[in-house]
Each structure stands twice: as C-alpha cells, then as structure tokens.
Image (cartoon, rainbow, N blue to C red; front, top):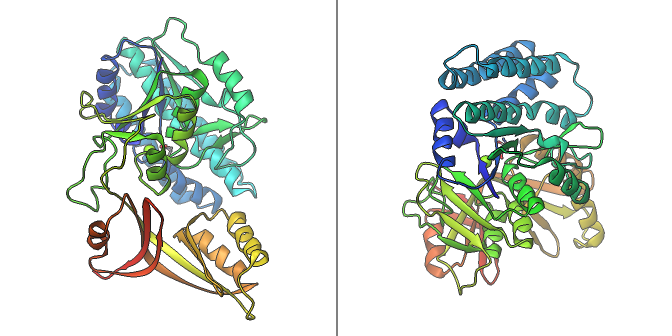
Length: 420
Ligand code: ASP
Ligand code: MG
C-alpha cells in the first residue's frame, strides 16, 4: 500500500484533477490519497474567517461567492452531466458552510477558524473522489476526522497516537477499492469538533497515515521536480537533491524549505518508510528520495525566510538576562503562539527572530514591554545555509548587511537586511 499526497497546486483546476487520474493509472498498488484544499482555497477561507469574526457581511458574502464559483468552475470542467450526483453533494457542502457562517462567532478565534477552514479539504476530496469514480477508478471517500483524534489545541492539534492508530486501522480498509481519498490537514477532538494540524499540514497527515498503516512509501506530488538546494524564486541555478537522509530532510524542512512540512519526516523515519518528492508535471522523473541513507555531505542548500522581525529585549535594571527573565519571555511568546526562528542571548539582551505575523507580534511586544525594554526591526531576512562554505556565504551576503550570525558544524544562519 502506498500513500500519495496531492497539494493545492496539483488540484487547482479541472485539468489538474484530470492529470491526477493519469498519474494514478501508472500504479497498480492500493493507494491512500491525501488531498489539500484546491489552489489557494485555504487562504480564501482565512479571509472568510476574518470577515466572519468581524461580522463584515458584505465581504463575507463576496468571498463566499468567489469560493463557490471557483469550485463550480472546476466541477463543470469535470462533470459534463449536470445530473451527476457530485453536484448535489457539493451544493450540500456549500450549504453547510453558509449555515456555519450564519452562526455567531464565539469568543474563541482558533475554534471558529478550525470549524470553517476544514471546508476546503472536504470540498476538494469530495470532488476528487467523485471524479476518480467517474473516470472508472474504484474509489472510496473517507472523512479523516473520524480517525485522527487530537487534543483541543485548535489550529495546531496534537495527535493522540494510540487512539488514532486504532481508528485509522479500522477505517482505512480497501474493500475492493483501489483508492481511498481523504483530507490532509484535518483531525477532530474528543467532541468531534474539527481541529486542524497547522498550515501546510497535509504532508504531515500523509506521514501519520503511512506510519499507522505501515505503508511501503509516501509520495508528495509537487509542482517542482523534487527537493531543490534553493528556492528558484530567489536563486537561478538550483540543483535537485536526488537523495536525502532523514536527518538532512528534517533539517532542511525545519529551517524552512517549503517543499516538505517539518513534522513529516519523523513518523516515516520511525518506521523506515521511504518518502518520494516528485513532480506531478513530469511524473516519470525520479524526483527526490528521502530514506535511511548515509553519505558524507551534500552540495550547500540555501533557505530564505523573508519578512522577518528581530525583537531585542533587555531588562530595565542592569540585571543580566537570566533564567527567570527567559522564562517570562518564552512564556509570552508561547502564549501568543509566536515561534522563534532564531534566538541569541548576550549578557544584557536577548534577541529573537520571528515571522512578521502582525497581530501576534503586536501582542507579544505589548506584553513584553510590561517587563522589559523592547525594540524591534522589521523587513529582515533569515538565511540558513546547510553544508555552508565561505563561497556560499559570500554569495548570500552580496548587497546585504549582517545583523546576526550563528554558526554550527553544518549550518550557518544569517539575519540580514537587503540593501537592494
Ligand atoms: N490546505 C492547507 C493549507 O493550505 C493544508 C495544506 O495544504 O497542506 O495550509
Ligand atoms: Mg502544501
């Protein structure tokens, strides 16, 4: 049994969905198919959620209509016969979404977010399951929320591995079907309320299911040829990394290679399951294999995080930054869910680099100011180079000023401001 994961770009149009059928036909195995929301649907739903909590009816309706039109256009490209049952089902899902949006927002933003955000994956998986069936592929649609159970951490659910393993094994069975289609990114708590696993979490879902079902391998289908040593958005001559150890894959993902979600690797490594990252445009190309591999080193890889904020924190008195102060600082960052991308401690100050999530940064800075002297700088870049050398550092530093540097054995991290 194989696990395939198709992300938003691979299901963004009727043609993209048809392409999936061509890919699936190449494989004789039974396949669990994990699918994300179509195209930029999750971003659209995030805007809908903003309008919902702000009770901005007019924009809410506009965005809802756009989302529906977008999905209907895909439906029309897939099902010529307007009598196809898919239309009834998808209308029903949009009806449920409208009902949900007609309710009052609660005081819990993260809870409301998860109750709405999940519609993207429900829509995409229903459409795809209907289409595979329509194309003659024996398919069953599965609601992953009935199997993956989490705590109540909305927007970042923590999996209950024992219970979920039992439910996944019970529910993900092939009964004459070749394909089981299910949602990435979603799970539910003990009250059956939807809990999402964090943005871009569908890769993680694929890994969880592969681990629990002991799949032979996982394939993540992307619009790039595999894992590259740099993002082609920022670099001209990128190199395909054809083989990666689990450790290198974890490191690259952790520092921000957007191709694989950082949580994806561990569940696979623990069961020695191979991960392929392949192009849905050129499905016969080998792509990248992540596996239990050994080698000396790789070509340098570059990871850029843009739009970073450097927060400098120092005590009001002349006390040093010590454990008690750090406890307060970490507590505040954790409370507002702001993740540290890099940190540096000196005797008299503590500096953290975070993503420019404006709402959270403001809350964190406000609260830090109750205890410390705080200043911050925006518009920075965090560059990580794995397997760095002097040449690659020079290449990265062209036209930049350096604010912070951290050097390890394999990795270097540079916080820079672009002068261009
Ligand atoms: N649809 C979700 C997102 O865009 C999950 C995913 O695509 O992995 O974040
Ligand atoms: Mg994705």
